[in-house]
Length: 179
Image (cartoon, rainbow, N blue to C red; front, side):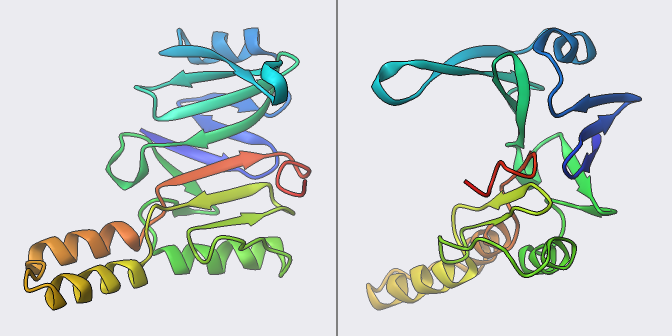
């Protein structure tokens, strides 16, 4: 399913729009019955929000005070949901190219505290994450070769392809990633 991410606003798909700040009841009316709904807890075990999962758990919505504050696509390149942002496929575009595009739209004030595993773009309310980087795959391949059990070319290429794409993309308001 094709979904359009509209930074700082929400998402659109199949003629439906889910907007940040939307009440939970309106969101569920637009989405249909969710796969799962979980209470989330903060410090000291105090309830602090709700997470709603839809589309075979490929899409998560976080709510605070019954209002939508964050949307995250969890399916990655292999998932059924393939979000588009600024006219490009979020999971089908090379990770470095997407970072370039998002940096251009956001400005230079990006957050890269995790050495290439994730980036946050606070001005446009977007965050991306992946489990490994191409450098990790190269290091793993070198280690395996040193241990006398080299990765096959197919395994190496498969891992490198995964590391070259983002696994999740999230959307919040302009304050979501700044705190």
